[in-house]
Amino acid sequence: MAVDELQAIIQRCQILEEADFKGEDFSLFQVAGQKCLEDGYAAQLLEVIQNEKNKVIIKNMGWNLISPLVRCIFMYKQEDDKREHCLKILDQLAQLCNPKELFLGLLEQIEQASGEQACQTVMLLLQPLQTVLLKLQNKKAYSLGLSLAMIMNQLTPLPVPYTKQQIQEDKLGLCQCCNAVVDFTKPFVNEVIKNMEKSSEYNDMELKEELLKFCMKCLKYPLLTAQLEQLEGIEEHPFRHFATEIIDILWDIKELIPLVFLRHKSISPHWKNQEFADIERKNSADSLACLSYLMFVQHFGIDCFPMVFSPSYLLQCNMTHIEVLLKSCLLRMEDNSLLHQYLELRDFINVPQDLVKVMTLCPIEHLRKKSLHILQLFIDKFDTEGKYTLFRCLLKTSNHAGVEGYIIKNIKDQIHLSLTRACDNIWFTGHHLISLLDLVLLLPEGAETDLLQNSDRIMASLNLLRYLVIKDCESDNQTGVWTTLAKIEQNFLKPLHVGLNMSKAHYEAEIKNKKENRRGYSNTVCSVTVSGEKMPAMTTEMQLQVLHSALFTFDLIESVLARVEELIEVKIKAVMDENS
Image 1 (cartoon, one colour):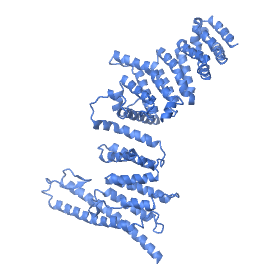
Image 2 (image 1 turned 90 degrees about the vertical axis):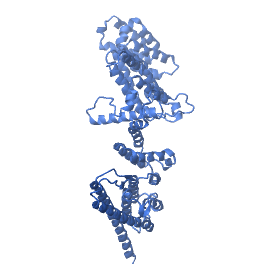
Image 3 (image 1 turned 180 degrees about the vertical axis):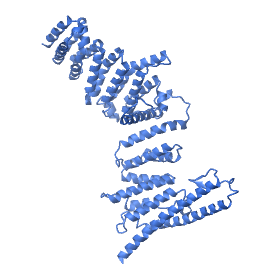
Image 4 (image 1 turned 30 degrees about the vertical axis):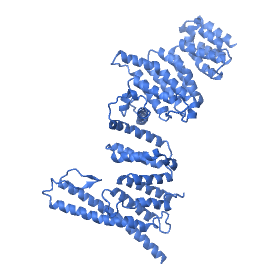
């Protein structure tokens, strides 16, 4: 009988000194104890463990029972007395065993758990793991960090519940487990708080740093992708509660405000491997972006936030985080996968329009470049009809020649895909394209349009028209450009000719005037404008340089215009010769 075998081993070991225990004794104890558990004698095994005479034996050998014990706990039903006995055994082992050996045994069980049992195993072992860690005197911070890292590694592969039903069901136990892990850290948080209260120059940063690493991981997973809006019918939203707890920990260890304002916080040691360093930097960026969202959008911890910063400064601090959140969401999606119907939602139109405002109005160069990059990502994710709708919207609302030129280049790329792919794309060919070209191939104010201010748009339009004339034969007329050529000449090419002649004459006269009045012109205010704004005070030589640059731009436009008209003439002549 299993119990008799165990008693025989216990009796033999009771007469031995602790130093005399052999490897064979450990193996026999483990086998006999495992057999007791598997044969249903958990109550008898509990009596053996609770017997004061066996204290030394359990201290040295008890940790070997963790693996079979965890298996049996999950094997028995919730209401089974045997399961209750197993839980008591686990509690006793946490109290009696060598902390170092038991710590390794518990971590091994967490590491081996996966899939549906990951959360259940973690929640089962959190209390004994906490008991053991509190007993460790040396390397407590290191052991806590190892435990939290192992736990988060097991949870991270699990899908985060998002809908109200998923959160309420919590099939894998993730919602419950996350909050249990936060409770697990509280004694260690309190220890850091007490140490900081004892001395303002608290130097033992290891425990604090491990808690900070844990909070940063939690911000990336699960909080970065979690549904945090208050849901009707859920009294205490588990992820909102979890977010509150994480913010509270950061506040308690005095890291909340520094993290909000420190854009590139280094949480881990410097990696020698550049790939690891890049991954760490990306993870930190995601975590800090999530923290910014929690505070400034969901208002977690906002009561702790000092109200002394200007809105413009807060916007500047958060621009990087906004970029990270947007980019993170977009990169998860496949190109062309976002349905055009989403553009019926106001937010989906507001986002590109706001990006355009950053691109054109923000004084910080790297943020303007990032906004452009995100706008392109945003465009790429929509299906062809979505891209078509987005292009029309931005052409009408951007009011910026550079942005319009960029959109026209995107239109050209989509037309190219339509003409070179076998699939039929109705949105960038035929009558839909003609409707779009009506917005592109025209001068906003006819011949009186400021050609210098609109040069980016005009050059992009001419390049698009040149591409259409070269790529689309009049006999095929897939794009419809040959059908609408007369309208293009009337609304775009002819006014452009007139505008170029007027602009060149004006600037040549301005140059001549400045040269003639060079001596007394230095104190005169210059009336030349660039991009709609008056130029700052400049010397006459500098003004002349700008005027010559404008003439060069007009010459460039005129050169491309002449090439387009030449191509049109050649194509029309070729068709006429073929028909004659």
